[in-house]
Image (cartoon, rainbow, N blue to C red; front, side):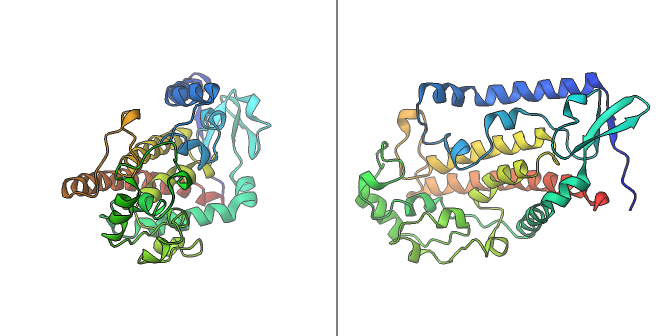
Length: 296
């Protein structure tokens, strides 16, 4: 198969994009980096830098994605899975997709399979974020994940909310943190092996994980898309913790009281909106993956 010719970006154009990307990331990460210097913890935003493995410097590095050649980017010629190409505008550097796929093809295929499977299903709404409640069910206060923050309803009230609801969590990386007493109460038994079969677009964690899949596909996807996924994950994480059993009002987070009818309605409305945003982003990631197909 003939390798498609890359689209050229001249130095002024791609350097402007790289600078805009860097500024955008600097603004997004300023608070986190400030807390890191002061060794302060944050129960909401730290998740984006502990559960997810991409370092701030890696998020800041700009990649144009597959099929783009940067004229005058000789400093990138030694980057992994990159190569130089001759063009009428001068020597350019582009992603060597064949080299990337030779090294990471199975991972790329796995991400594609998961994204396609998730997109094929309807969004299941109405889980009400009970996974966070299941993670503290019947636990002593000093054993919960965010022990520095009180439970809004206290231990007994938190346990009562879990017991009053039917849980049907589909996401393994939420379910695996359920307490031993909470796990049997879930209507499903998610596993790593069943992820492709169970993942669905209404799940907050599946939407947050679009960030993980986006950065795992670097440098084959544009860095701007990765930051879009980061912003979506940050917004979803806020809802995730506002709907949790913790009282985070001291940090300015108004609780979504999912134990009430009004709180449930607010949660579902937000969940539906995030599912729509996630579906658009999932489609863009699949479009970026489609640009690799001509090199296989």
